[in-house]
Image 1 (cartoon, one colour):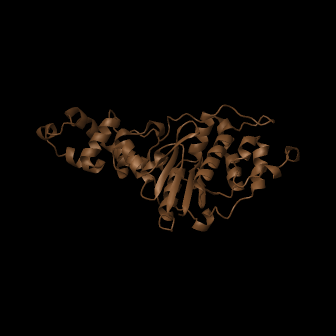
Image 2: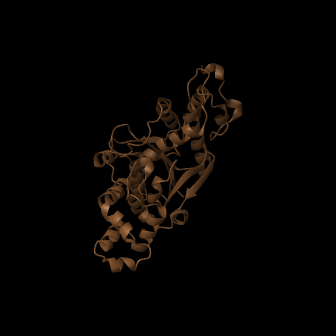
Length: 311
């Protein structure tokens, strides 16, 4: 089986930063996000033995979603500088591991992952696992694509395939963007329909399938026809009609793009060509990540580098 792991780097970095207490090197350099990121990376490498790997990053500039909706992510509090300062160092670790880094101006990491996943499923890859700290990429799950994410802290993980995703939401995977269109997403400030929550959004989609079909039906219904649907009330229909524009916009904002103009090929993602273990060791010792050394693939204690040579 040829397995590709796609890393949602920013999601993991944020998760690690908030999950771990402040960790510093002897020189006072904060490293909690770097440590957590490296720990998750090693866990997945050792558990899944990938053939191909790549990490996708967000860039600080606005994306096409911000252009579509000015308030996209506007309510999200700015992450502290201590987090942002650690992001370049996670890239240093990835380069040492010989893992490709992908980013594109105007797009988010999820869009890059969606684009790579779509292309690679047609390129003799048997399984694609998305490593992330949130559930946004569940809409990409299919018979080849799974999502590996964290349930609690950094050690409790779960892999979502088609079965697990459908069980969690009680919807078809292709309906997840419609679900966000109706319910919205507070973390990204995607508005949805005001007053529609989890249960209502799920019920509406189980009945009507898509946002498009829902509105096609309710717009031509009379009051008597509305009464035939137990889940519909005049008040709910009014809410839906009032926020119709927001519902369709929210679905668009929630939809992961799969057509990012990105140049890459399978050879770029090949991880079985190996990595320089001594280079990774040097970085880990520099950051005082001594407990991570023994988890390195190919680690041999008898040839461990001496700290005195690295400072």
